[in-house]
Amino acid sequence: MICKSLKNLNLPEEKLVCVLMSGEYKALADEVKTLGIDVIPSVESACLPYNERYHSDMQLHNCGGKTYLLKNDCSIYQKMILEINPTANICIEKRLENNYRNNTSLNGIAIGDYFICNKRNANKEMLEWYINNGYIIIDVKQGYAACSTAVVEYNAIITDDESIYKGCQKYNIDALKISKGSIVLRGYDYGFIGGCCFKADKADLCFFGNPKLHKDYDDIKAFCKNYSVDIIGLGNCELTDVGGVIAIL
Image (cartoon, rainbow, N blue to C red):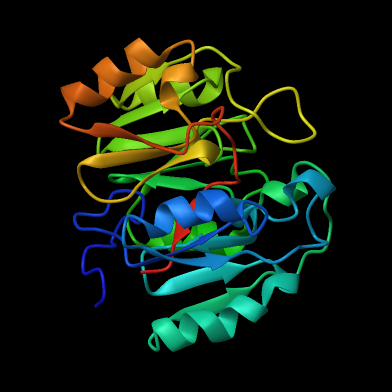
């Protein structure tokens, strides 16, 4: 069965069918499978910094179920995607640099009619796709735009990043600004909220770990409740930035 509502992969109207997520977290991937969602484990990418090498939101960008962009050493996904979605159009990025901000070229995120990214370093084909399809670009300083943004509804996000928060306010997108920290990311002082959660369907925002351990949990829960979105914890560990989840279908 194909999820028919992937115009915006971050806001599925029905349950996702298949996702790509880090191959480093088998136990958490197994938690996703308990939701009835198939998981493709990511492969290691030498085009990314060591601690991000398995992060799916740095390796692959899905523009809505038909157009996919891949890091050039992640071409193994091309065959997998075409087996699942034979009509997919797949573009492979040519750049090789793994330094910040080059590593974040695919790390943009769509919300409603908007696309949040750092335009200066966004992948050209990705940016053109969103512009040509009528999205309004919200240009932010943060290179890790997708990592830093949890999409709750078509006009609602959660972030700890000031530039994303202000950018969304400019376009009347409801944004909850949370404090930094409370999320684990290997090799870094802390992780990002977008990298530790995803919408499994219209009503459920799933977190990798126990969301109650976040110091702003009460605010997060209340914000989500305003949009009739439930919070689901996958596992009982600390919240963990696994590099996000990319919906394939």
